[in-house]
Length: 66
Image (cartoon, rainbow, N blue to C red; front, side):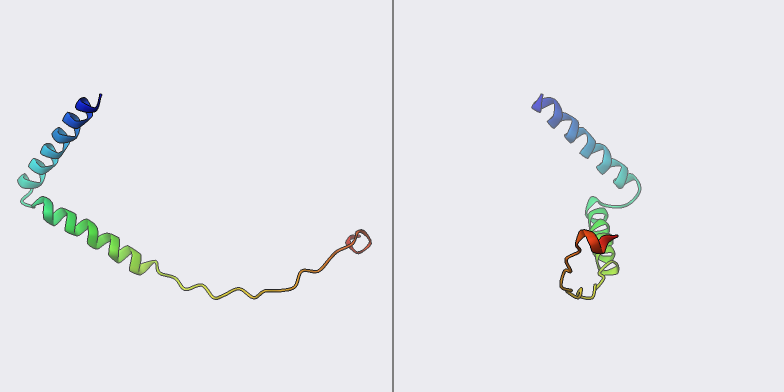
């Protein structure tokens, strides 16, 4: 089974490399673009959340709940 998967992965890599070559782009450029998109998304989604205030818990008895 692992030989079959290895052959399938190698075939997929060869196919994608050929498609990128036909499109005039190298695989390196495609990987660099992907990394750039990840970094830009990370910078864009960096949100600072204010610290929450801690409050003391109050005990509610059955009489108070009514």
